[in-house]
Amino acid sequence: MPAPRLDGMRQLILKRRSPVRKLALALAWLMLGTALRWFLDRGQGGVPFLTLLPVILITGLILGGRYAILSAAGSLLLVRLLFVPTGWTVDNPVRVAMLLIYILSVGIVVAIGHFVRLLLVENARHIEQAEAFNAELQHRAKNTQQMMRALIGRGPREGEDPQAFYTTLLGRIEALGRGNELLRHGTVASAPLGPLVAACIAPFDAARFRCEGTPCEVEKSAVTPLAMALHELGTNAVKYGALSVEGGSVAIGWQRQADGHLVLEWRESGGPAVSPPGERGMGSRLLRPHAGLSAVNLDWHPQGLVCRMELAGTQA
Image (cartoon, rainbow, N blue to C red):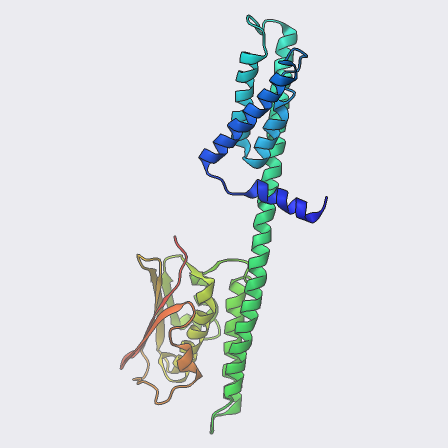
């Protein structure tokens, strides 16, 4: 069968319909099958369910199992009213056997129609996921390329140690990679915040961090920006902040707001007095609202930097 016809049949089966419309279609097909049997021979030739079994199969395939069961029950009622002689009972073993065979046949027909429909629905879902995955791969590759170009293109500033610059650059690239790993390269819609934070602080002295917050998921749009921001904060803490001296520590906490957004706070303590940087570099651009980070607030307390970020989270 040509592909366009298969696509047409697939669209017919997977078309969204309201329950009222499904019920109306099931009843209409049942009436059509009954009318066809009536006009053939009014059931005098036996096998009164001959035209109703295909109706049940089509109903299960297009509308689903529950409507096929409803159609099967309706077919029993209509056959009993229209095609079975008055006074007919099931006291005859042959009649009982025929009725049981019909019920078994209907069960098989309903199961086949419903199962085929489920396979088509599952296949359609996988196709949608594959298309979304391909689009995400293209988008993520483009964003990664732009980020890499920006990081590498800056180069060491005048007087900056090239080795220190490339060490910092490598750390940022690794942070970017860890964010992508948590997303399993775009195959899921979110990443767990706790493991993401743990992965981002792993290159530093993790024993000097205190992390706590409720289990929650971060939308994929916020994972990479958050990973880059946390790595930038950690790098600055090692150079100038709480992690640059013995006894300094960092507390990271997060919570979910009523609107579904997540608030994450980075708070340094026990380090030297800090002040806002005199010039804006790549690090400053990483610590500002963009993509999934809806807000980034830096508070340069003398006791230590406090960074408060709002990011997109999935609904609980």
